[in-house]
Amino acid sequence: MRKLLLKNIKLLLSVYEHAPTRLKGEQMNQLPSIADAWLASENGEIVDYGSMDDFPGITDWKDLEIIDCDGKIVMPAFADSHTHIVYAGNREQEFVDRINGLSYEEIAARGGGILNSAELLANTSEDDLFEQSKQRLIEVIALGTGAIEIKSGYGLSLNSELKMLRVIKRLKELNLVPIKATFLGAHAVPKEYKNNKKGYIDLIVEEMLPAIAEQKLADYIDVFCEQNYFTADETSYVLSEGAKYGLKGKVHAEQLSHSGGISVAVKNRAISVDHLEYCNDEDVLKLLNSDTMPTILPGAAYFLNLPLPPAKKMIKSGLSVAFASDYNPGSSPSGNMMQVLSMACVQYKLTPEEAINAVTINSAYAMGCEGLVGTITRGKLCNLIITKPITSYSFLPYAFGSNLIDIVIIHGEKF
Image: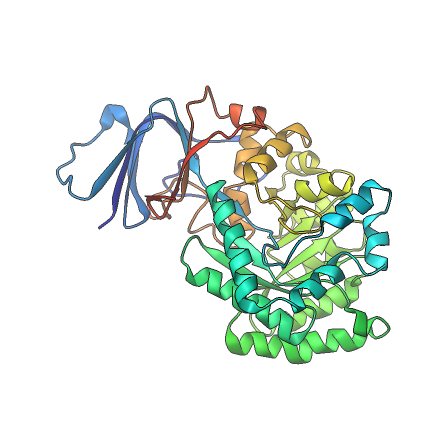
């Protein structure tokens, strides 16, 4: 039996006897905490916690690891609800091209972007792809991520999409952190279907989806709803076909223009709708009457110099908001969720409390893991961050360039 005791915790964050599934509006500014606290885990789960004033006597010290957290803050590990970490190679040349004046759309039009990644991936063996992706997974866990969603979408053919999803399944089987797999065949139209988009959509619906369902390779289905990619009607069709196989929807929406993706996501009861740079007031009203989690991806907006989504306005309107990394080779080549936390405060003007909730409990909801991670609650996984000695949790977004994580705990053990 693996047992862990954290004692003398300066502040234990996001403590709930009965955790909500997500936080909305003003609730996002609440961060229930215990000062001078302790926490115990057994077999990878949180079993108890409380104030050091009420610290119980320990009768069974066998196989018990004790960590003194004097001066340190303990919080739930991050949930990263939107990533593309299964990819081959990189796209650093496109980074230079953008510096030299080319837009994301111009790079894509000449065969770069997603199509570039698809070509690299097609020429990479499954084992090599797995090893590259495993290293990225280990990297982000060490940076504090305790649950992660991973998409396909750099395959754009039956064989390559299945290869990506098999790699994600192999990553799941490592049992490092909870992983959700998302099928994103509708990420772009491959070169061979340039003049036959309907033919590619038929391939997704008639060949890819049945094969994925038969092999049980995906939890969700996603579509890039954007001009020059997939229209709102095409997005709705692909999502509805995915639902026939039990795949709940996600949508890349309103990133480069307003393409109606939020409306489609709400209509199809998507679990999340992500990016949202061009979200408008009407979209906010639609989201208010839905269970769909708006998810902001600040890394992509930063890397592509896009307008900032109205995250603060969404919260003031009463919405839930999540933040995620969008870790991918073309528009957000980083899975550092501590940096995402800081960007939420600095660029989007979220309070530290709102930002912490956006990258933990709300982002856990956005990937269907709210019952496992996201808060300090008995019975949830003991996936935690122990900070270095710091003055307060506001120091986390404030000191954006510092490594403030002392220890990452995964399944009740030091990672």
